[in-house]
Image (cartoon, rainbow, N blue to C red; front, side, top):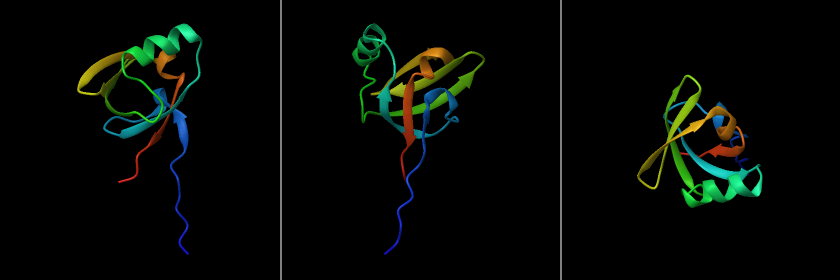
Length: 83
């Protein structure tokens, strides 16, 4: 049997540009969780990191681009999707 190696779960803020990723969890208070969910950031949702610029991260989800501060992005735990 071959062993399937899973990608590590890391904060979105640490994910490099150009990666397709899956949201694993959001580790925040209810207010921020509700705000992110209303924008489409839900568990098992797929997003793409488009650009990391000083202090912010641009991600694409459901065809919409969002700019997130590094603090907010650090609360979103993600895993790189396997090709």
